[in-house]
Length: 150
Image (cartoon, rainbow, N blue to C red; front, side):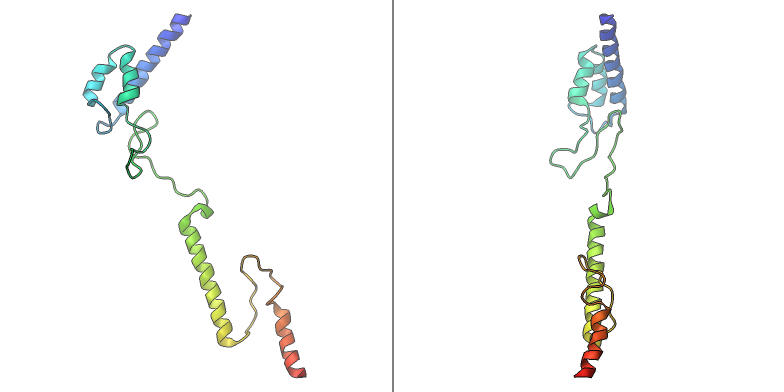
């Protein structure tokens, strides 16, 4: 039974290495040309091991590159798609637009306050502001009363 498991493992290694070698891009194969790797693969145990350790394209980005592309292998060949942010608050463009919109709304509110005096009150939309505290309708209703009594 032990010999059967060993033979099955070696056969699996041989087949896996062959499939990986066939699927690998010729431009990304390391050390030897792809055609010579087929000859090396024919060696019973050393061939597949040499391919997996020395000839197989690297899966990660190339050292010193700009991110590089993914390698071959069973999981896929060619460049890997770049992943974008998973949530809106992880997206720098979204956060920048949000800041710009918040700033534009704040500047518009300040411009209206300077041009028209106190003007009609708007609910607070700033972070940390309460909806009805300072700047709510109560101070405006008191302002004409104070002016009339004086």
